[in-house]
Image (cartoon, rainbow, N blue to C red; front, side):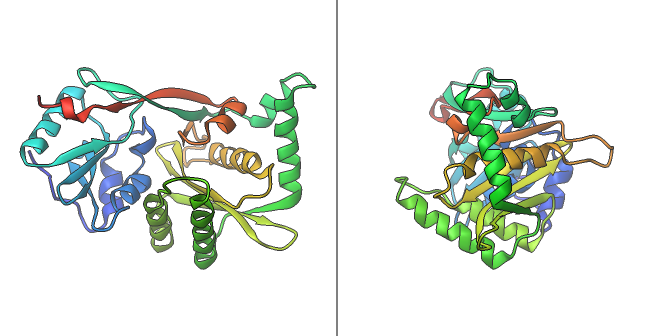
Length: 288
């Protein structure tokens, strides 16, 4: 096994140069690096530029891989023999032959040409979904301005406010990945873009969204906003999708596909977004 601890100091450049075109949600370099560094003392571990983990001491989380399932199984067995404990995320479009797995989340995506407004207008005029989408767009545009530059202090204040609000709604709030994503963005933007949603009436930063572009694809990583405006979440997601799909590349074309993750299922289904089934691996069975 080679390449176990050979990451260069300029980690984004070294990682991004080795990655192929994304095929799953975590195949994007900035999100992958932020996840790798999301826990105290954790780092991104890569093996032969094909298999990527978050490493914290002897604990490994498989983030993604760009090899056959047969090659992946060999890597996992070797790591187990070295005393590592391994768990993982969920995977959608990878080679999974020979790996024991179970169904996990729906992974949402949209292709170039998608429009939430066009979908709404295709529905019956009496449809509640049509009404909700068009109302959210109209109210959102009346109420908020969308900015492409964020103030660091203001962005972190909103994020920390979201953490406190989320504690009242969720048993466990996962924040390390998003916190590290923001930290890295304000240190070195790389391929990440941020949107700020500011309320016109009082100038309050109401929501922030972060996404990255890579090889004519895009991935939405960070999405945090305040609560209280019942129309905002729908407008926020619609505007983010529209912005991501309208990114123009040096080739002259627009983004071909955007990866939107597995949260907010009800909202994403209501917008007629496409999805694929993802799977989690039974790591305990590997190597037995």
